[in-house]
Length: 175
Image (tube, rainbow, N blue to C red; front, side, top):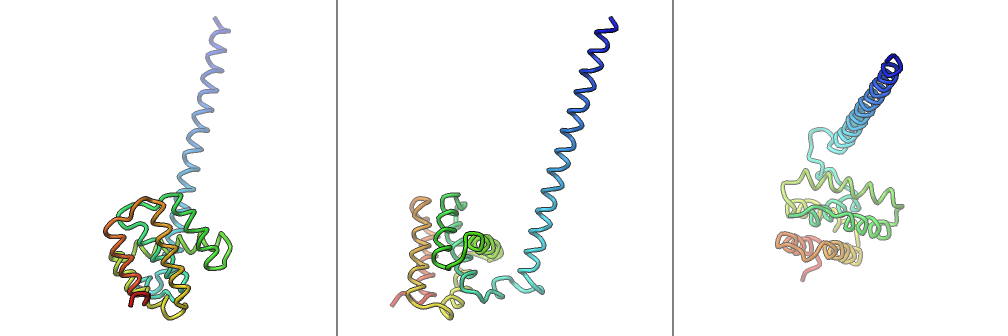
């Protein structure tokens, strides 16, 4: 009888130890999630600046292009992994940056796109930044990049088509 009690005590001790490890892992995940959210908050506050809308502070045409790309592609649907990887690779080549910088531009652009009232308002606000600092060929290449990225997710929605039309107008690519 005492052997059975010893085995039972060992099983209970192992189960208790496994439960404590499980709880520690759950706490670790919660801490990591909180740290990630805190980091995102700090980056967002830095991007937003002193109580100004973030997209009014954008001076880099690459950031403006990434925000417009994210806003148009995400209009009415979520950005897929294929679209995200295509956009990152295309921005890497177009912007002449490494992959990490291209991913940073895309994530910054997605933050900016979330802060905008709507896609067309964002295009109207950030279009002039691109026009001022890029050539017509670079603007045409950007519109082609947006169209290629949209093509990956299936046919564009009406909102995406309208936003592309406004983009062409704001980038002075329509006669």
